[in-house]
Image 1 (cartoon, rainbow over the protein chains, first blue to last red):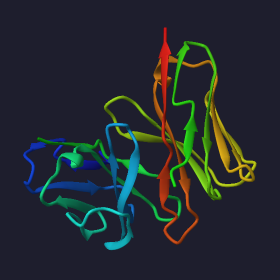
Image 2 (cartoon, helix red, strand yellow):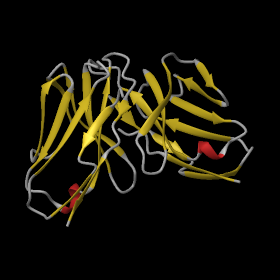
Image 3 (tube, rainbow over the protein chains, first blue to last red):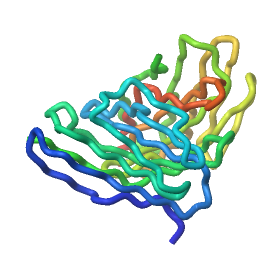
Length: 112
Length: 111
């Protein structure tokens, strides 16, 4: 199936821990994103990569570090997790220019 | 800055119509509309690229007023499957044309 797939779907962890979320797309897109959706359902852009190059880096704590090993993969590593990091993190991809996003199913992070 | 959508929430009976508005304080270069069903990912509905453009798909259509920096989504003869949260997204027209999503409108269609 052609899709944007994220793992894991659920993450429950303690404050102070480090966690990673992985994203892969097989749509042939060249641009990938991380969005954060908080409890109020606001969708906020965090990062974007185009062909492995970071092109968007919003005001996000430097505890968040994205990595794109190739244009089909985008990972998100979060250090020293805080309560406020609890959210659903969506990966998305598109062909650059059109910016019509295809989203992954989301990864729900709960920090206790 | 995040586009503002109105209303925040709307409840409809099947067959009724609804309008969702999206307003931006910045110039709009493109407007996207997405629908997110509960517990699922947002799904692309349509994109409007030019001021004055109107588009339709089935009984869902949208308009884009570039001068007023607004877009509206029209849902006609709503169906149960229309329920979800609707987001507008505005491209900033910059080099990356990043998509900034609006505040969202929760639509509930009841039998």
